[in-house]
Image (cartoon, rainbow, N blue to C red; front, top):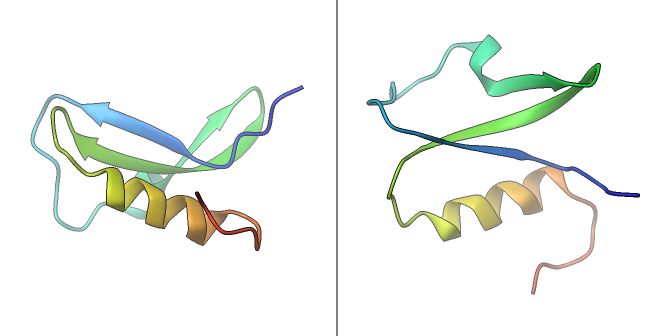
Amino acid sequence: MACVRLVVDCQTEALPRLPEAEDLVTVIAGLTLPRLAIARGAADAGLVLAALALFGDDKPLQ
C-alpha cells in the first residue's frame, strides 16, 4: 500500500509564474491529486517540502 500526497512534475520547458487552476491538479487512476510543477534541474527541495507540509497531515516533516 502507498500513500500519495503530492505529484511533483519536473518539467523541461519554461513554467508560467501563475499556473492555470487545471494545472494545479492531476488525475492518476481516477484520483485527483495536487500537482507541483518545478523547472528541471531546479534546486527547489524547500519548495517541495513546504508543499508536502501544506497538503499533508499534521505530522512534521523530517
